[in-house]
Image (cartoon, rainbow, N blue to C red; front, side):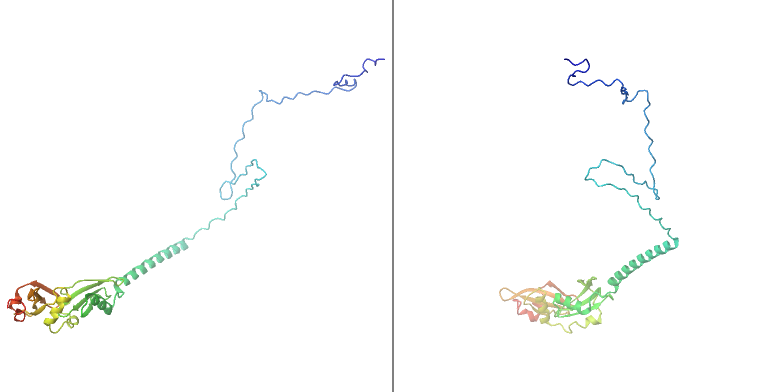
Length: 276
């Protein structure tokens, strides 16, 4: 017997009709799109930056997409700075005068030190300059007289055997010295004239000729009619006489020699001249 109409088996996938006494659900249509007749809102005007007590813009925290590894950024407002104290004109003037006084003292100290080193400081002692100059010149006697009170200039008289010279020694601030010819500087200086030999001999003139590399193994004799000129005869290659020099030996003038034939007229040298 077949079931009555409406109570039979329903087809798979179909739903039973709602009961007649249940109201049907209301359907509301929602338009999610923008309507063309609605106005577009205008962008908000930028806000004025907030300022701190010093008149500087305060930091603004801008959020951003953080990952789990980013630390949270916290911006703290900067601490207000205390107002700068007003400088007193009196203390400002005192401070500027102190700086000026310090600079003047430093400059004055440098100038005083330079003056002391250049004009007052004793650059070298008398014993030191005599030892050094005499050792270089290989003199037998030396005497130096200070020309400047700080020992920067010295007049030095040197005596070898018969010859003598006068030198000027200039000393720099560190004690180094140089010499140059001091012609006329040693004349009439009693302390320098005291070291001159009282008598010039022929052997002393011959020794100076050899030590000053003028003539070796010379025979010397006083030239006739003069007190400061000497005739010196060098050895010849054949045992006879060689070159003849007329040598001037005067205080502080060194050895001045010239070629001459005066040896032929000196009795002490005539027998060695080869022209006797």
